[in-house]
Length: 161
Image 1 (cartoon, helix red, strand yellow):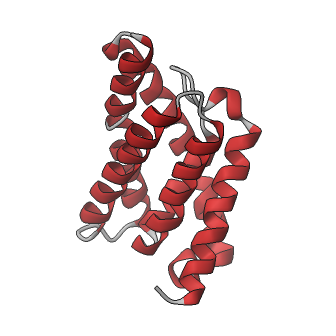
Image 2 (image 1 turned 90 degrees about the vertical axis):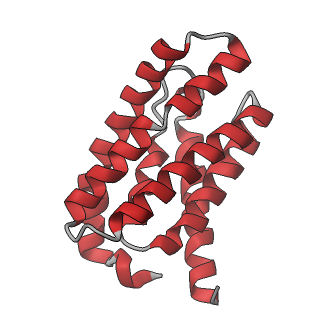
Image 3 (image 1 turned 90 degrees about the horizontal axis):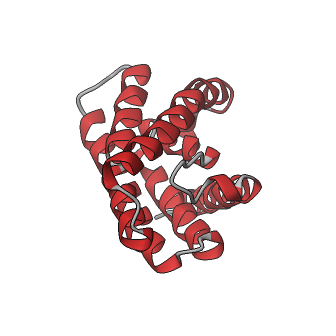
């Protein structure tokens, strides 16, 4: 990894942590609304963003999660799985909007992993928790998509890293 990629991913991780800190109470419940999840859309521009996103998720869970051990495994694992699905699918999709839609769906569907985590940690019902966490994830990702795309028009995320 070259130094520019390392620096950009470090900044991305720091931004993920900072935004997560601002909405901390809403990022770790059964109705999750973690605004920093919109940074997941960067993966549709360049797969190298996976390092900054995962580092941001890991450090956010380490620093702020009330259930660190669970979140470090399940939270980072869910992000890794969803990002990997998006990376694989994006090989076959040219349209940025379609890539973002795939990313939204990958993250929304894989929220069953977080539902399982919350079931193991607190005994919450899996199906209901999957529904509530998926709705929160879908909302953040759907609202974040046009915002990230607008920033992309100014910054060009494909060539930044």
